[in-house]
Length: 177
Image 1 (cartoon, rainbow, N blue to C red):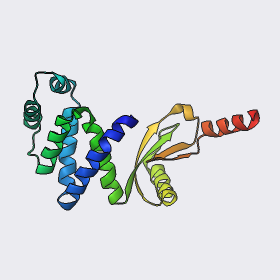
Image 2: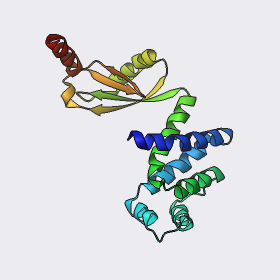
Image 3: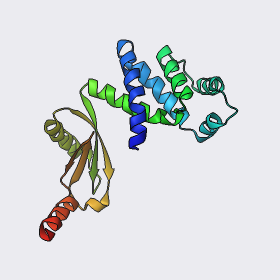
């Protein structure tokens, strides 16, 4: 995973710099479409075939997408194909979305909980997390029964773990030290 992120970062940053001057929303929509098409295993197999040329792969992808692509997206697609990085497009899209969110002061947060969280309670949790992380959060909840109780929150590379499982592991480490 880290390798894909390392490969995707320069592409995402370059597209972000170009799209920032034009239209971030359009670039994001186009990149999401490219990422979903490039994730198709049959397309990847076609692109990796020795007899498939870069222009053929480009033409197939652009014909599958139901929307016209801007120059920046076309240039990105050509560059990715020429460098044999078609498999990296979904990660490029993810990093591009993260850059757009960061610019607008919004971060994605994943709240892991032992149980499902009701929407009213989730709103309260998100409000307190926004104070803690000092930014607006787009929160998604994932149920992880092995946490026993409490929550674990991941925002970018920051983790806030208040789960019972984490507390038990801390106690175990303290007792065995």
